[in-house]
Image 1 (cartoon, chains in turn brown, blue):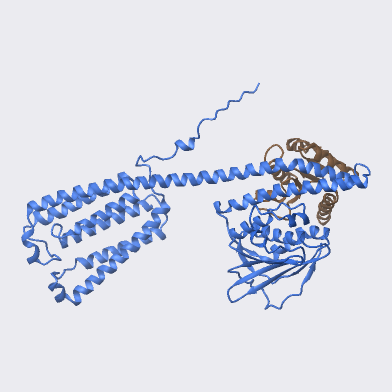
Image 2: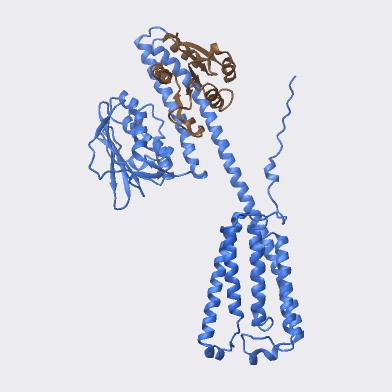
Length: 132
Length: 490
């Protein structure tokens, strides 16, 4: 079954670009305009993604970060990538800024590097599941 | 139906500024404690002076009598003992007892003032309340009370001083018919000058003086405290404004950069073949659009970075011990894709050391210097990153050397200026924001680092970052210069 990826961004051009790249590579993509839409979708187990790509500033300045905190607590198995215009500049907003578990990708969307990061993250999940 | 009301009245903070209204303006416990320690130290000096005086009296009493100072009885020893014991008790209460209702800095100060006033009254009594100016030492206690207590409390101290001085004068002049038990000034010099009427007048004059001193010093103290509160409040407002400014800068950066990111994402889609085949002409045009958009995006992010660095001094930036090898490794890892795109090889030979810096800023500084080295290198060249440790003065250097276009002699003094623009550099790198070295300068200033630049146009540039007060890691082996190692993407 194709890995399922959720993408949240309020910029329709970015949503479209990510969807095109990931669909072409065989992923199943669910795009959301707001973080709340994404959180609501998680109530249905069938919608639960393997990986979430979150923008940081959507409804508010830190909605991506608060959403991450929520889903990381409730669904630790969902890998998360931040895709943001601010790149590493948002790192100070992570209080205990662990470089290991926070993956920040700076926009624009660059197909090769985005796909490489997603492969890497999903491989990590598989390795973790196998070792468990 | 939703209804929301909005009002934009004047800031409440302005009205909340404390006026010179007196009673509310008390010093906080931290300031009181530091002053309690100062009082205790001052009292030890006084005790030492009294001991010295007593030793002098014992060893050279005949000589002192010639100067009109008569032999004292046991009161100086008693005062020394009381003050010493009291001082020890204050220190014990301050450092070894849990603060509680009955052991607060304020109570500690009150006890000190009362004990000191009692001791001073004894001294005044024995030295002579009306025949010597010793009573003026009471003024010192009133002034200190005005500085460290509220106006009302300092008034209580002033009243206490007046009562004690009055008791001493009455005790000395009305309850005893003869002159004081012992006086510093010999009897034959002062006995005839002591008159009861004079004593009353003296007492009245002193009490008036004490109240005048209280009034003047307490008013001055209130003004100073009101200003201090305003400063504190202003400092809080500045910090708050700083946070809001940073949020605003982040928001603006996001809004400015987002459209560029959308444009560049679409360009990447076309170049990646996601929108069908593009002709070489279109691809070439897209590359140029992308380069210009990238330059603008870099500028936007660099401006935010620069603003954040400039604001560091306003915040209480924490210096941490940073392992230079790890920091450099992180920087190089980030920049390897950029180096690979220009086929620039990075060779590294670092002897590790530990420096006290703001970690994020050191990373920004090194990243910018290495990025510059890569950017201004010729294609297919290399850059070398080495270190030098000077054990004798505990300093170390990180040297980043490139083989690129170099910097012209006339430009070299200006490269760290925020508004410096070099057409030659811009020609080589169109995507540069032009403020990378300003960021380096501010990061260096914030972290007290020195930078030395050596350059030969057409040959290359070498940036040396000099770290002072470094430490060597405990597990460090005695050092043999490591060979230059090429770093590649793992």
